[in-house]
Image (tube, rainbow, N blue to C red; front, side, top):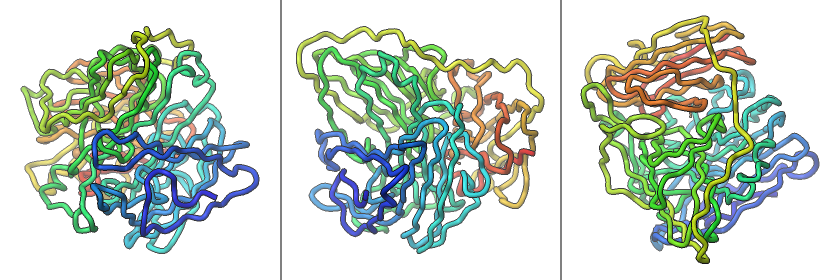
Length: 489
Ligand code: C2O
Ligand code: CU
Ligand code: CU
């Protein structure tokens, strides 16, 4: 039984009934924490549901909820009554079975962002539509060789993605394998940090946005981590924190830094890098993830987020810069917020990060079979801008085709006035080059294409055929039509 969740007291929620018992009955854990608007509350940990005997089976109930806020309450849409929704922890080879119940007043569905699973049938099929009052049971077969890493789930019903995601509907999926037993990783304190930026108000009307906000990509009133505002954690001085960070916002781009000095980036969207990289700045577009190690000494360490202006154009170099950060043209548009503060106990100095015994090495891609140029943006402003290759999304049109077993090379250009993060379902890619010359280690499923810039990716089309989508992950732009279909045969 795993009804209303531990983190935060909730009211007006449709309780979800567990499917509990027997094989695959999930093991749950979670800690209280405090969904408070006051800075300095304890970091909440979403409930975690883990697979057993190769199966994780659960119900996700999507419903409006009132969350505690500022001595009162704020209105949100949530999975199982909590924002973020439960963390789903699975292993390669597992079956993930999710019964999605729709207790909203609008259609919804579910997408497993970044998972390399089939886009067809009851798997990661974005054409599934669940009407109000209805439900759908998704059945995801996670390949035995699936990379370990941080992935996530969110709604994907075209036209409603931004309002539902921005209102709180998102949660983390962790694929764990033996790599997590590496001694350096095992001795670190792992925290999953889900960044969101909701609009805050006591009823549904508070979440409404203007046409201009949709065109810009809506941003909320506050930046939260795991639903809390500027929370704190305590950690032993001399320990190492492992932060697995997800940008689950609709549109906001973050530039993250820590007061404790550089972070060691060990993973990105698609799991571990081939080798760790020391970074002082980490840029996360909506949909992207980062896995970092942060040493803790005797003084408090804060993780700070600036919001990046996504419309800047500096000599064609673009606004947000790239996934690893850097990007000299980057400017910020809001006061930085301390996303998380670590208060150390004890007086040991910050440790040196040890060498990982594990890495994710995928064969380098030396040739490509198919080449394609993709262009974000059309002429002028208004809805005509939110197109790919001049066309607005049409679920009944096939925009790109590829053959199963081939490798695609795509160059994505952006001649519009705004940055657009490119995302494709099912098949992860390697960034081969970017117009600003910055490197991007690791494998991704989401990459920013800055205004005036371009990115070239290579994408092995393996394991699964079928039709799915690629789109801008500023999900307002996706809803406005900046999405296209790919059919793999
Ligand atoms: Cu995270 Cu097609 O989406
Ligand atoms: Cu996705
Ligand atoms: Cu966009």
